[in-house]
Length: 456
Ligand code: FAD
Image (tube, rainbow, N blue to C red; front, side, top):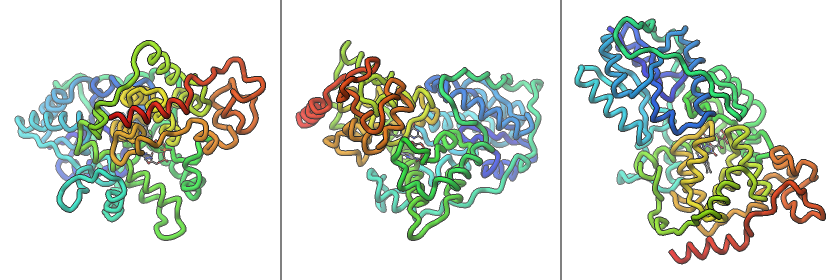
């Protein structure tokens, strides 16, 4: 009797409830990952490279016994189940629009062979769909959701490692889908964090020791290493939020850092839940009133879009952030909000164009958090920043990068300007010649955005 452990976004061996489930069903299991073009396609080089490195690390943990195949899981998984005569296939549930459909199709195809698809756990602290209002309706507002979330038992990390399961050696002879090598890295332009489970834990422990206590005070500062940067490890399930929650500790008074950190993990669950209840919100305005919002188009708009993408808008904080996105395949949360507001409200371009660009470049690019982060900033989402709240691209820089260090780090043309003056180079007697003047007048565009909104 055999089982299949099908890895997707849970590339780890510790705290793996699917291992326990597989070991309870079968004496031996086959570990598999399917390279699925539908998921690989939209991920840029940084995310693909990080994924391949994470897979290599997982394969090593499993003693080289991870079978990697290429293709459509709806064909590959049932074929493999037939080849190894598996009675069950074990996964962590996927709640994204594509993953749900795929898993239903796989389940149906497996059912025709009398094989069970067994879902145990998910990539979230509380599964999407579990938290609703008392009448069963989904929460559309974060705060009441978070109150309910705080009450829920998130469970303790499961005590597993690679030896929890007796792994089968993948074999070419059994007629299953052909094994492929984990693809080579695609040299990313960005510096990426180290992949792998050990790296994730070391990174996490360093954050808890050095920065968690100040997290609430400093989390909005892009010039400081104040946030955890765990998003990429969470994206691929190299670590589970349950493990982070167990590590932050400190409930009760006077522990603002841990409290604030838990709150952010709750945001991740909230957006996954919103996407679960409203799968179309990945592409469409959550608030349909905005469907009639007019956006700019034509060559001028395209040129402004490129200036935004390439970090040459002439607003130093915006440009620093867009260059950080290229340089690290990551951007600080405060700056994600600022550049998103700038694209939508200063350049009058639709949020989904910015969201797509982010998903291409971000190493932590993740559909629910990204699309809803964008909708929040655009004012079209769940308890969004009201449309009339327009971020000022200069004061955001002055407030959150008060000494200008973040700008100087990412915009070398401005590296010679001291202190906060760096946020308004156009005010200098001699502005640097190789840095552009602002491409728009913020005050005028802010008014334009409000006028368009008021006409809706
Ligand atoms: P920390 O501050 O250390 O937070 C800890 C964890 O909490 C994060 O790793 C993340 O999992 C979660 N978290 C924090 N803030 C948020 C948030 N606002 N929404 C949801 N989860 C949150 N996050 C992604 O993981 N992937 C994305 O593609 C993504 N796109 C975004 C796009 C926009 C326009 C905005 C405004 C936010 C986006 N976020 C996204 C949320 C947030 O910016 C990142 O999770 C965060 O910057 C990651 O850095 P960190 O791990 O150091 O965060």
